[in-house]
Image (cartoon, rainbow, N blue to C red):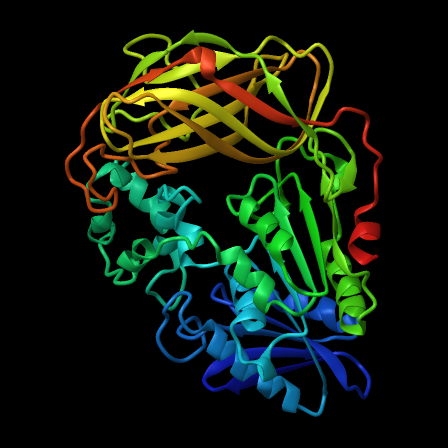
Length: 494
């Protein structure tokens, strides 16, 4: 293998070529997280016969220019793709690959670049689809701590400081509670001019339709059940318009197999590098079966199932414990960092719990909570947090959903809070606990209940809530019979 370096319009690029004369298909990873971190990955691709490239995006690490997150990736990726295809070692075929922001770069090269510069296949792992998608839930609720952490570490600086937010919180534990949220850079003590851009964008409801219209190449989407981009990963797969789309999801966090969740099992230790390379060969050869296929791991069990497997919606009976009337006070919000329930004081959430499961329950697919409730403020967020209470007494988070409402004060509204997709085996004896609250802080910014933008608000009001507990319905996607297991490689490569 031959390591090389190149400057492509000021963009620092490392290249690993396979042994032999070539030409070779190429794999391109464009990243803001330092191209040097991908050396082992490039060697792995080269061993499998691919010319492998990693590139610092504009304004980061060794690349020239200014760093503007999400702004230049289609144009810079297109220029790089054209350069690759002009090289004597290139056979003209190109796979765009990456995880998180690098997945955004790969998708930009497939969707937004001019036709002559687009990638021939895309591997998008835990994709940060765009600035609006990373910053907000589909309901519009702001993801605060994750975005504050990312921008503090990577925004408006050439080199990352991964511990920037943690150090700032150590000095000021109430850092994220200070208002307005838009003033975070001043409290961090450094310039962060792109911070307002995070919140100016709104998610486009029909954006999945653009993927169907623009995407014309094979896709491999990879995600984790515990990743905050899990829903976007599945939506990308469902709406992709290319000839084939594959989905692989397991009980992992944002770091995938390097970040297993509490429900991961030894059977979920997938060799992603080998799978990527085998899929890329088939994708470039055009021999993948058309359509959407893939595999999903059932957490808490060793099973892998076809990605289109879904349970049937089943109502789970819940017993209300307390908090049918509660106060959502943004000055004392329900915390996202703990599953502990306060034992006394004014209720700050409605709490419901199921009877112990009499037998193991396999849930696979979208879950939701339906309810009828009232707020005495015209603007209110409603969070539903579902946890599993194990027979041993531990609480494990299963899902969190959010709905943003603007109903007349005192008006009883019926609405649904989506909880996302579950893929979990719940053992017998498990009890399900549902919390309905007005905040989930600091994971999400606090709704001030004044009608002001939560990012610029400085005034907070308490909001009295009333939940008609008899109306609360938890619907889980339950597999009625024991599912037929599959092998993930078989599903991805067919």
